[in-house]
Length: 83
Image (tube, rainbow, N blue to C red):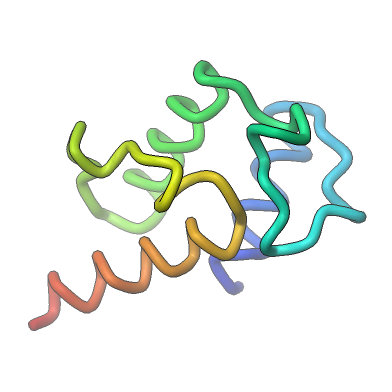
C-alpha cells in the first residue's frame, strides 16, 4: 500500500472525511479536510505505521499540508533511517 493510499484511508476511517476527490497536491488544511487536532492524530498514525518519529520541527505545512507532501516526508524519513 502506498503512503498516499494509507493517508487517504486514515482520513476516511478515523476522521470521517471524503477524500476521493482530493488531489495529492490539494491543501488539506485550506480545504477543511484536516485541522490541527487531525494533524496530531495523523502524525500518531504515521509514526506507528511507518516506525518513524516526527519531531516538533517537522510539523510544518511543507510536510503535512497535502497528501503528496506527507508521502514525500515519509519517504525522506525512511531513506534517512536506512542511510
